Length: 154
Image 1 (cartoon, rainbow, N blue to C red):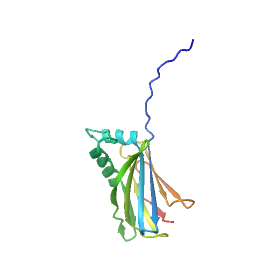
Image 2: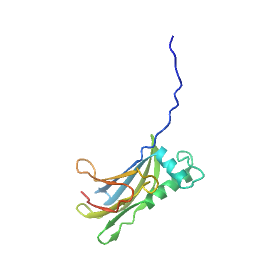
Image 3: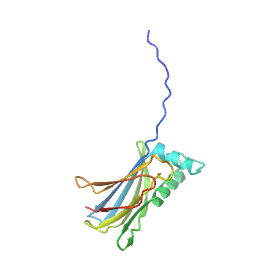
């Protein structure tokens, strides 16, 4: 006789956001993609006082989170801030992807990058930024209280 017990399962916050910055030589644009676990994103919105936090079905909630990510991420060059355009977002699997782009400074330029995605909410949050694609990737890791960091666009 086999006994089966119902074990409650709970989604756990991963407390990690991953952003990728790359130069697209075909468009000469700097492309930024942010990947955040849905569970973390919804909890972040709740902690910031959002009434609705269903990012999957409520487009305005999704836009609210995309704007939050855009406000907590920046790139600067020696001549000033890079004006990142928020293109939109999509849900895939258990993640929300947020897309931004800007005129690219081009490979070899030093950038000053800041990613505080959810680091203002949780003390154990980590926000990683990958610069480049393929074999030429550098990674910056941001935790609460960190200042902007420099990286060179491959």
